[in-house]
Length: 332
Image (tube, rainbow, N blue to C red; front, side, top):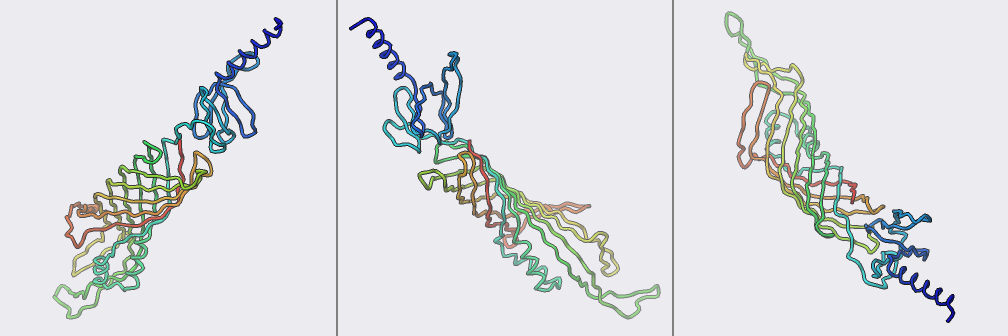
């Protein structure tokens, strides 16, 4: 063998050994990139190469453009390639942040409220309309979760239910007896007062939660989630009457005070959500869930007084509901 051929063979052997010791990325177009792979995420591969001046340059390539790659002579594939070597551990996103918005429907019967309104002489049609307004409200939610495994995550849930009602009615207070300085005039007339009432209800919730999730297809575009949460619930009710409205009852003048009613309780929710991934780090979904809570103690406040009342079992304020919403979630 001549000296020139020996040198050529030696160079080829060194080049082969150097290439073999390098990492390698093969694209969907079957282009081969010799490099040093730095990190691999569900969406990108970060790697380093030498440029024409032998300077080390960091680069990225989308995982969607990669058929397979090798690290330390172990060959791996992506979902776009065919397995011909040892598979790496399946990577997954660790954090999820989501917001939801939609509607909710209260499950309580409101039978005691209806009886009180009937005793005031309010027509049944107005009572039914009032309860319909009260039952249907708005739902807003937000959550942050960290996933211990690709299947199980833990985090915090927040939700707000809000609804409002309005009712106009005539309040009858029997007969008013007329007097003058000499005494009773001998006749009475019925007393009626037009009243306009606006009420607002808010139920805030925050608590720890657990999420279970499952891919529904091999392309990882559709996912099912189940969520469980138990935590703290805050109730707030604002009852407002027309300004300066007062009632003259049997020679006594009584102002209709605006009321603020507050309470605290334990609450819990269960939720099912269906997600679609238009992008690896972004998903949109539809949610349906149930929330259970009831308030046994209430703090009732007016401008001049405040008192706390323990409610008997028949008068607990039940704000349990079902809710439905659309969600957008970020994954990283």
